[in-house]
Length: 140
Image (cartoon, rainbow, N blue to C red; front, side):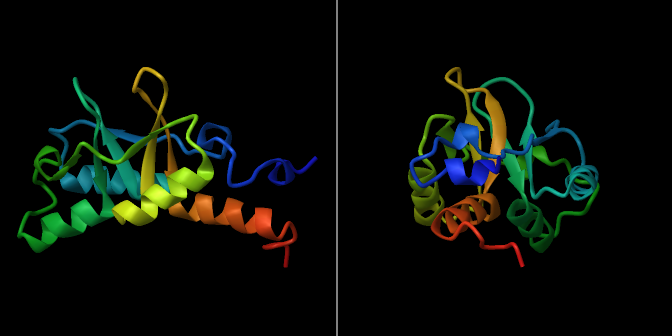
């Protein structure tokens, strides 16, 4: 049975196809982290460490290069602190609204303890919403 028929705007994001985030350390270089993101086909990495999660997105990497940092520079200083996160029980509609309001393409999905459990991309959110509106969308 196709589970796309079971989802809709009210579906909790924790039930959607979330991808495991690429993990990185703040002392790793921009080049190493960018390579890991590319290899995984993802455009977001989560930095490990104590406290609030931090992320590095493609936008962060582009900004770092524009500021003159090279691929050997550590990724920690260019990471986004306090990224936009949603709880796994947030509805897809609320998550999509948040992406639009915050101008982000990824949401870090966290469990009840605040630990990252996956990443919801704008692409996956849009795909799910379009399939909900038209179940045969994307079959051609």
